Length: 138
Image (cartoon, rainbow, N blue to C red; front, side, top):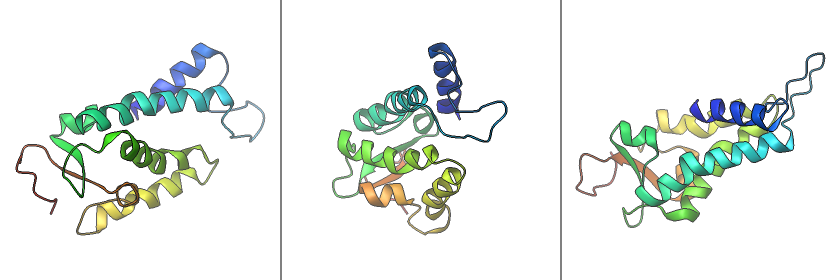
């Protein structure tokens, strides 16, 4: 949610309507500036912190961290970027984007491993940081 608020503010500062809303039309496409703003926000708030520390601000506040499933270390830039791309790129698709994003996240809510499709694609998992024992997630 914070990312979309920041995108809205950045889009307004850059001029225009960042989420592509047009007063008298149903055109829901994002304009180029909004896509660049969204990409910068995702990189700054998700990719860099997850790659370097294993947690975004929200995950750190909840005592969670993202780890590679093969080494249980921080995921690194490539895996963090891939994970974020699979999670956030669907949101750029008009109308059905949020539905696609929900399908990406849904497995994390129902599968015993608690991993979404973005985690499966990137080879990552979210674990409790407080455990500190490097054990696989339950």
